[in-house]
Image 1: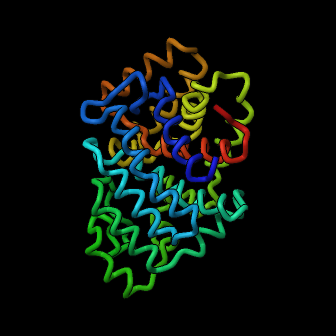
Image 2: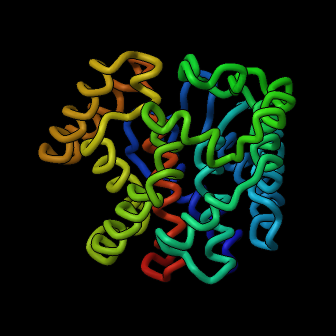
Image 3: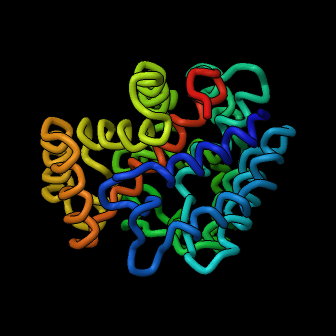
Length: 280
């Protein structure tokens, strides 16, 4: 498979894994977001992922992927996952899918890449917290209206994401060599063969959630709730399938969505697929 095809497969495997507490999976829909929305979003993201594979600038490929992803009735299904996958696809296409290889990709991003990142927010309604104090007029909620400020300040896409890497784990991947992504990929490789392929992503999702509080949960519900979810994920891992199912049902009922952890799971699946460590 090509890097772009592996990225689409990773998105499909991520959403198909179940149970995935708090997130849409093949057994659970949310009130306004359904399994088929993620399938359609994956198909729509294809042109942008293929553009990244062909060497298009990261920002351009990302905006194109988000624009295509958003052409379904559910709205934002995979914005964060695509922000991880586009540079990973580019690194894979360059022949260096490693922490150092993807670091080179993101550190080479430009002002125009940053402008296209802001434009991507015009295509999908993305939940974001108040920007860091030093962000100033680089508030992503402004979408393309922030592009003049991007150009005036001369910030690259890497610079923009570095502004939020203390409070957003997708941004933190960009500035930390995709550390959790590669951890997830290594863990998937370890489990491959001992865990059914259909359950691999869900298992590693739960392990990621147990290791570190989800930053989307922290933004939406507060740090205390995010830590409580982390502890409950660890208890679920120790308690077995019935406990995991109950945990999944309770998060959906409470409207708690660890979406950042799902994004990291998709990125880890891509790396494992591209390296040939997981197959379907």
